[in-house]
Length: 111
Image (cartoon, rainbow, N blue to C red; front, side, top):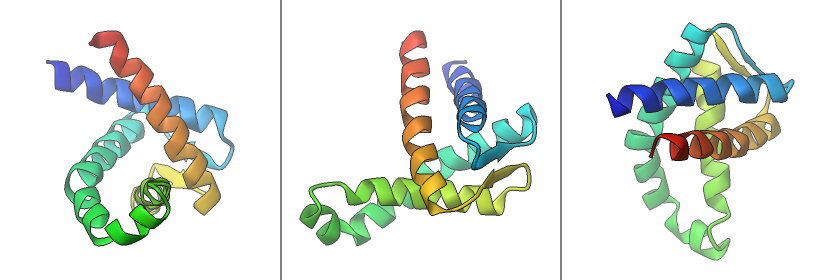
């Protein structure tokens, strides 16, 4: 039940990001649900491998490279999914940061 609620809140967060940033577009709530699911799966399955592979550069940049990884995963999801669009790397950086902040705040509501 909680995972379903977190998934819905992440989709809402994605819709808020698309509303606030003109370089990010979400076609519908259904598209937001699919994009939130894909982003969650990417963060769960792909991101740990990328973090491990890029550990030296992450250490050198004092962790700031993790922002680049988040942006790349966000941008990748936007390029793969049909109803979710990210118009470039810098929009992906802003969108990933804003998405993390909003979804974190919404998740605190149910915790």
